[in-house]
Length: 105
Image (cartoon, rainbow, N blue to C red; front, side, top):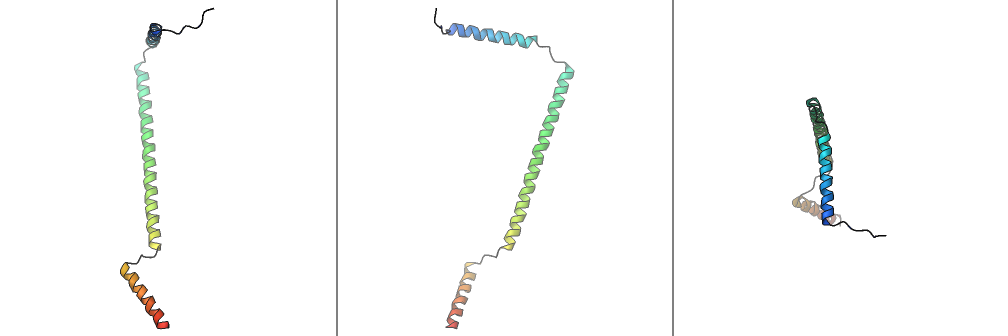
């Protein structure tokens, strides 16, 4: 009994060429599409693209609305927060506390 013989370069190229011929024959064997089928496929494709575009635009509108809502909420939250004092105002407040402590003694 003979062992397995690995195919050589010529065998592989012949097999590839046979596969290409077979695929080309199958492609040629298919009936050409009629104009009605082409136009129907084109219409479906365009409708799908339009639907996808509308979905993307809806998502973008939702994101923009959410961004605006977050910005408005942040502005409301910022309005509720106490106003940060400047260095000069903090110094005046510190001096006032110091003077009040001195006055109590």
